[in-house]
Image 1 (cartoon, rainbow, N blue to C red):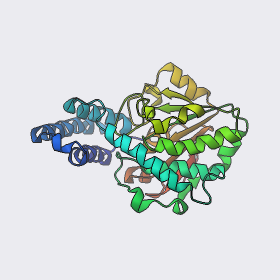
Image 2 (cartoon, one colour):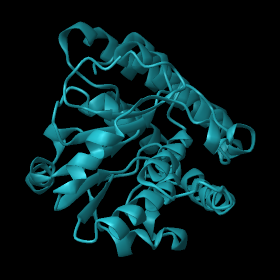
Image 3 (cartoon, rainbow, N blue to C red):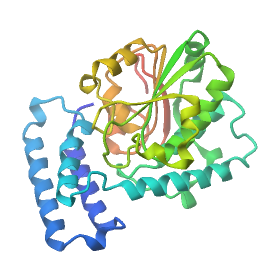
Length: 301
């Protein structure tokens, strides 16, 4: 999915919102905030000049913008405290979710739990509060390709799970536990971001005690990719080989959709919430709906 003018506006809004709402915002000097916003505008203007001559994805463009933020703040992981809070909030919500009578009984249930975690996203146009928006029973899917997923799992020996945001990794564990219990010979690789960017989960984030279970279920690896989405061409050979040889791939989140929707594979499933107007228009799926898409290249909606 190619970068658009709306994506550029969204990137600026993300930086602006962070500088004004971060827990550390009171420590930012006014001139520092102004310099970051001015530099962000310059970088976005440069990207805008090449919109018609590039196939740049929104996650690829985000790398430059967030590197500028980190450099200006002299902080390689400015969203660290947000990620820690998200992990702790996710654990609280999951404890409540376990009281739901349909919780984690079927593969379908566990997929729904996993995608519920995808609402934790400080890099989207929309905001979300678990306290005001949490409703497991009311999840609406524009597409739910569970049958195709079950068929692929029947003969699968390995599964590649491409993670998304910190916090939602705890929701992923519910699905991963189900897969290990019902497909005990399935080897699962859990792939996280290669460097801090926005609130995407990294190996450092998984050191949080609440995340320990993931290491009992999966072979956890860094993608070595810096963007908030899996860009195949940016991956090292080892990661590309794992992607190419996987019997089943599950890629979580809208950033992964933006990077992978053009790769049509019988074994590729994209699990995300439609959080922005650009993805809604591009995919044909309604804004706000959940999607579990078998990305084999047909007309989706």
